[in-house]
Length: 319
Image (tube, rainbow, N blue to C red):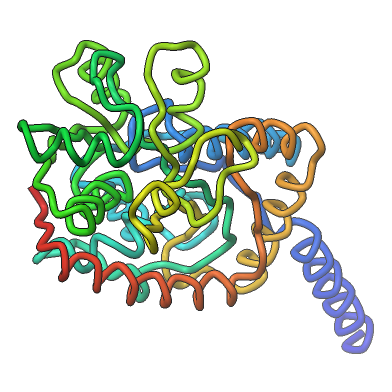
């Protein structure tokens, strides 16, 4: 009797382990938090994942929580349960720039998150209102030295903000930063001529350039973007060494179990490798590269060091 009970218990135990291995994640509805308003690159990536992940058997929603340069949404996830049900599309702002920019951060970018997967990177695109007479970087610098110019951003601490501050420092100009609660709020003011320019993410800005609503001056990456090879870089246009790219990665709250972490990583890589997804990202100027959680962690450490230096040298402050 005792032996049969032990065998039965063992059988149930192995069955439970097998079920666990097959159903590690997702076991409940998933929420992907985007720390900015709809329409930008983080939102695009989140919605692609949400669309493809619904095939895993659980509903997936995208929750936009903008504000404080992305800190509000990131902090929400940092304080959520580490069960894989709440994730955040972290950015270079929320996980590399803000720790140096804000005196009182509500979270620790390294300690309070579990790195899951790098999603994609993209250059920022320097675009101006069509009424601005400058058409090149040298012409823009000359104009900035003659009259007050403004540049908008999706919030203090974002790569859009720091790209402008880096431009100020390297060009020796003092364009005024105008922060918005997301790039969706900044674009109408740019189109209306109430601000001069924005260093917007390529996926957001390129369609407006192609439609003729805005004029592109340069891209902020070290090399020209395959999505718009005709647009020169800031570096080749008169500011050698200028480089500022945006990146986006998936994070979970600290304490996420390793098996769940690796399952989400694998499902992210699977989606980013889909031909239709790769084609869509390429047209938007987004370069996917999921990698491992360890690679994301090491990359983030490098970025924290890099942007801390930029913030210090530029004197940038959180508005």
